[in-house]
Length: 152
Image (tube, rainbow, N blue to C red; front, top):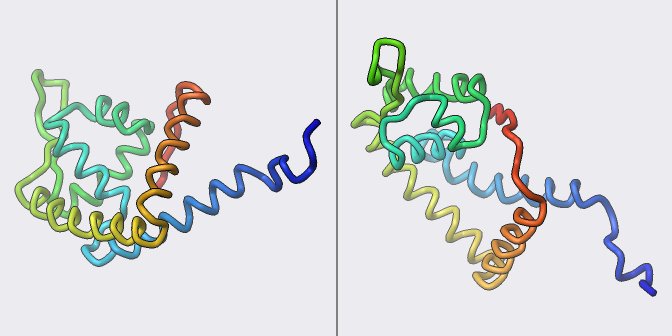
């Protein structure tokens, strides 16, 4: 028999969102020092690491819709950090990181690392490792994720 104190108290969704907001605030504050949102840093990193790729493949890799990706690409293209150019044939397009985009991404990476180190110091490395393990295990148990809109 389970006692009331060993049952989860409160809404798990609310608690996870609360944690996400607090962690996000830590990263957002650090990333704002280089003029990027964390989602923009992630987008630059994906394009840099995956190389020139079709927008549909980038959207799939980032688990977002094509329309969300298109909206999120616009400020990075306007800033000159990403470009969309011709692909293998006349109908295809490829997203590429520019030289200035690589410079911006390296600058942003320093801030991302600072945010990660700050979080590790605040929570303790053991707790962060345990949190990663719990998240990974939970994601495995929840099964494959559907593509969702990330309007950031």
